[in-house]
Amino acid sequence: MLIKDKKRQINPWARNKKMKDSKNSNEGAGINWVPFLILFMLTIILNVLSWIIPGFSDVYTRYIFPIWVGSYGRLTSFAPLSVGEFMIIAGLLWIVLIPFVKWIRKHTIRLLVLIALIMTLNCFINYHCTPIKEAYEDSGREFTVGELSELRDYIVDKCNTLSKEIERDENGLLAADEAAMKLTARKSMNALGERFPKLSGFYVTPKPLVFSWFMSQQYMQGYFFPFSMEANYNNIMYVSNKPFTMCHELAHTRSYIFEDEANFLAYLACIESDDKFFEYSGYLGVLNYVNNAFYKNVSKEEYLSHTKISEQVKLDNIFLTDDNWKKVEDSSPLDTEKVKKAANTFVDTTLKVNGVGDGKASYDRVVELMLLEYFS
Image 1 (cartoon, rainbow, N blue to C red):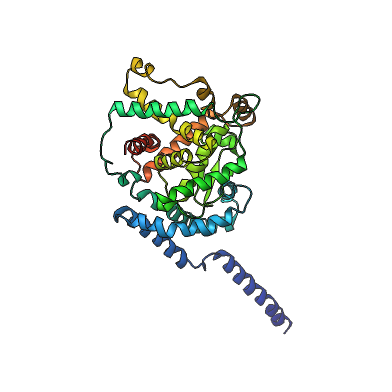
Image 2: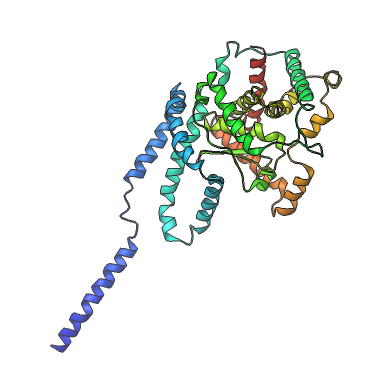
């Protein structure tokens, strides 16, 4: 009896241990994958529809996309700092912890499904909208070098004139109220809604990037973060770039994902603004594109015979001041050239994957849009 009772005491423990081991070995086996499978299939279907059905992306960005901006984008706008930056940090930590944390490994696939869906809804579909240039009657025409030179001289004249009319500090540097700039950028973009209906509606508040030094090493002025629906800008860059960049990134938040179109809309928003500083930033924002295109299409003698860019404009048309470049180089643990090369490769690849055949060179296509606008 004693032996039998002893066995009875041991067996329940053995059975419990076996059940516990079995439970541990099958941890995660009971995850309901059906919702994520549905989301994955929805992601594929939406991408396929945007590629093969003309007009699908136009309808989506006109009626559905604004819902995400007006809800989620409105929510993230309350945060004083860029939510997107902290999402990137969280993502990097997630990757680092994958080999060490079982829970993270178990949920990584589901996270990737959500990432793919969000990128599709907030970015990928937008690449298949009807191009802005289709709105112009002569969208298929080819412009002459003479027409390009006329546009170029017009932009240079505007820059030269405005450079003398805007406010500067005691050192001759441009001065502007950044808080006021954010409001003016939103107002100026909304005003374009009369011509481009998708630009009407709620606008998020442009936010400076905490890691602007890293953005500077990438030679990036701003960034639209699809996961937080934010328009972020480089806070270290020279102030002349900020109005144009704010408007550029805000154009992305209204579904205009192509870089040349965002440049074009930023240009229009700035030059049509009542704020002279915005107007100057708008012309400066496209000056290099137009001037470089003209320089490539004429002889050196022909180029030198045209309106010259003033020395003041050259001083204002910079990415970073020398002092800020020094601060970036001194404080960063990374090599700027390597960061820039990696960033260029990433941007170029991303654009080509989404059907932009010329990749990063597509930025230059803003010149064609400007010619269509100027001669329309």
